[in-house]
Image (cartoon, rainbow, N blue to C red; front, side, top):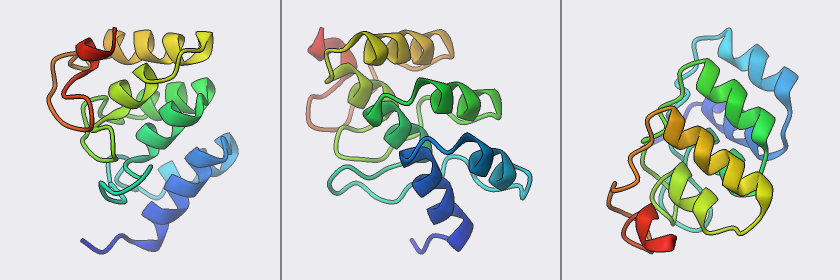
Length: 118
Protein backbone atom coordinates (compact mmCIF):
# COMPACT_ATOMS: atom_id res chain seq x y z
CA UNK A 1 0.00 0.00 0.00
CA UNK A 2 1.28 3.46 -0.87
CA UNK A 3 0.55 6.02 1.78
CA UNK A 4 -0.43 9.54 0.94
CA UNK A 5 1.93 12.31 1.92
CA UNK A 6 -0.62 13.46 4.53
CA UNK A 7 -0.75 10.02 6.15
CA UNK A 8 3.04 10.04 6.49
CA UNK A 9 2.86 13.54 7.96
CA UNK A 10 0.27 12.35 10.50
CA UNK A 11 2.48 9.44 11.56
CA UNK A 12 5.46 11.78 11.94
CA UNK A 13 3.43 14.35 13.92
CA UNK A 14 2.12 11.64 16.26
CA UNK A 15 5.63 10.29 16.70
CA UNK A 16 6.85 13.75 17.72
CA UNK A 17 3.81 14.65 19.88
CA UNK A 18 2.97 17.63 17.64
CA UNK A 19 -0.64 18.28 18.65
CA UNK A 20 -1.15 21.40 16.52
CA UNK A 21 0.11 19.61 13.41
CA UNK A 22 -2.22 16.69 14.09
CA UNK A 23 -5.19 19.04 14.49
CA UNK A 24 -4.33 20.68 11.18
CA UNK A 25 -4.05 17.33 9.40
CA UNK A 26 -7.35 16.13 10.85
CA UNK A 27 -9.10 19.05 9.12
CA UNK A 28 -7.98 17.64 5.76
CA UNK A 29 -10.11 14.53 6.30
CA UNK A 30 -7.04 12.33 6.65
CA UNK A 31 -7.44 8.60 7.35
CA UNK A 32 -6.48 8.40 11.01
CA UNK A 33 -6.09 4.63 10.75
CA UNK A 34 -3.69 4.47 7.81
CA UNK A 35 -0.79 2.18 8.69
CA UNK A 36 2.82 2.57 7.68
CA UNK A 37 3.23 -1.20 7.81
CA UNK A 38 4.07 -4.06 10.14
CA UNK A 39 7.85 -3.98 10.11
CA UNK A 40 9.83 -2.51 12.98
CA UNK A 41 8.11 0.09 15.10
CA UNK A 42 5.71 1.27 12.42
CA UNK A 43 1.93 1.20 12.28
CA UNK A 44 -0.77 3.81 12.71
CA UNK A 45 -0.41 7.26 14.23
CA UNK A 46 -2.19 5.92 17.33
CA UNK A 47 0.27 3.03 17.47
CA UNK A 48 3.34 5.27 17.42
CA UNK A 49 1.86 7.71 19.95
CA UNK A 50 1.06 4.77 22.24
CA UNK A 51 4.54 3.35 21.80
CA UNK A 52 6.25 6.62 22.63
CA UNK A 53 4.03 7.39 25.62
CA UNK A 54 2.44 10.50 24.11
CA UNK A 55 -0.75 10.47 26.18
CA UNK A 56 -2.11 13.79 24.89
CA UNK A 57 -1.61 12.67 21.29
CA UNK A 58 -3.40 9.40 22.02
CA UNK A 59 -6.31 11.34 23.54
CA UNK A 60 -6.43 13.70 20.56
CA UNK A 61 -6.40 10.92 17.97
CA UNK A 62 -9.11 8.97 19.80
CA UNK A 63 -11.25 12.10 20.14
CA UNK A 64 -11.14 12.47 16.36
CA UNK A 65 -12.15 8.86 15.76
CA UNK A 66 -8.93 6.86 15.55
CA UNK A 67 -9.73 3.15 15.90
CA UNK A 68 -8.15 1.69 19.06
CA UNK A 69 -8.21 -1.73 17.34
CA UNK A 70 -6.53 -0.67 14.08
CA UNK A 71 -3.85 -3.19 13.18
CA UNK A 72 -0.29 -2.50 12.25
CA UNK A 73 3.18 -2.38 13.69
CA UNK A 74 5.43 -5.05 15.12
CA UNK A 75 3.25 -5.53 18.20
CA UNK A 76 -0.05 -5.63 16.30
CA UNK A 77 -1.97 -2.64 17.68
CA UNK A 78 -1.80 0.38 19.97
CA UNK A 79 -2.84 -1.53 23.10
CA UNK A 80 -0.18 -4.18 22.70
CA UNK A 81 2.60 -1.67 22.09
CA UNK A 82 1.51 0.41 25.11
CA UNK A 83 1.38 -2.76 27.23
CA UNK A 84 4.99 -3.76 26.59
CA UNK A 85 6.25 -0.65 28.37
CA UNK A 86 6.20 -0.65 32.15
CA UNK A 87 5.72 3.05 32.90
CA UNK A 88 2.83 4.89 34.55
CA UNK A 89 2.15 6.83 31.34
CA UNK A 90 1.99 3.69 29.20
CA UNK A 91 -0.32 2.08 31.76
CA UNK A 92 -2.59 5.13 31.56
CA UNK A 93 -2.55 4.90 27.76
CA UNK A 94 -3.46 1.20 27.90
CA UNK A 95 -6.36 1.92 30.26
CA UNK A 96 -7.56 4.74 27.99
CA UNK A 97 -7.41 2.50 24.92
CA UNK A 98 -9.41 -0.19 26.71
CA UNK A 99 -11.98 2.39 27.84
CA UNK A 100 -12.32 3.41 24.19
CA UNK A 101 -12.98 -0.15 23.05
CA UNK A 102 -9.55 -1.69 22.48
CA UNK A 103 -9.87 -5.48 22.46
CA UNK A 104 -7.49 -7.03 25.00
CA UNK A 105 -7.88 -10.37 23.22
CA UNK A 106 -7.12 -9.09 19.70
CA UNK A 107 -4.55 -11.39 18.11
CA UNK A 108 -1.46 -10.24 16.27
CA UNK A 109 1.97 -8.89 16.85
CA UNK A 110 4.89 -10.41 18.67
CA UNK A 111 3.01 -11.44 21.84
CA UNK A 112 -0.30 -12.78 20.56
CA UNK A 113 -2.52 -10.39 22.53
CA UNK A 114 -2.29 -7.75 25.24
CA UNK A 115 -3.60 -10.07 27.95
CA UNK A 116 -0.45 -12.17 27.50
CA UNK A 117 1.60 -9.19 28.67
CA UNK A 118 -0.01 -8.74 32.08
